[in-house]
Length: 154
Image (cartoon, rainbow, N blue to C red):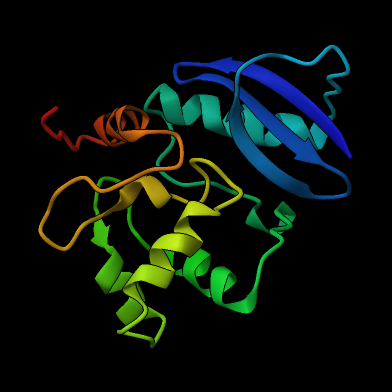
């Protein structure tokens, strides 16, 4: 596994890859064994464009190689359908994947999303309209939503 790092408005982002991208995540520090190649740069550049407000969707999703169960992958596919600047609820995602009673399982699958920002789990909120959780903390979720023009009170 190879990986590269870059600074973003959220902090340090790590992209892990082999022939395809395996994971995009926030980390605390840059590893000295960082390697950057064309595959890494495609997603680094797109993510930085997102932060600059120049990108509302991501290209080359075929270069992502998520590892997960069939259920998790169905949830992640549903997340990709949430438009930029919009939100959906855990309950709505459960209905979208044809399993309306699986709200809690949907939340668990969302928490295991391997692709920060690219698969927009930050766009999922509670059915009552409140913010809900986020693997990297509620403040990070607020920042991502704010980039997309959605403001949540503290």
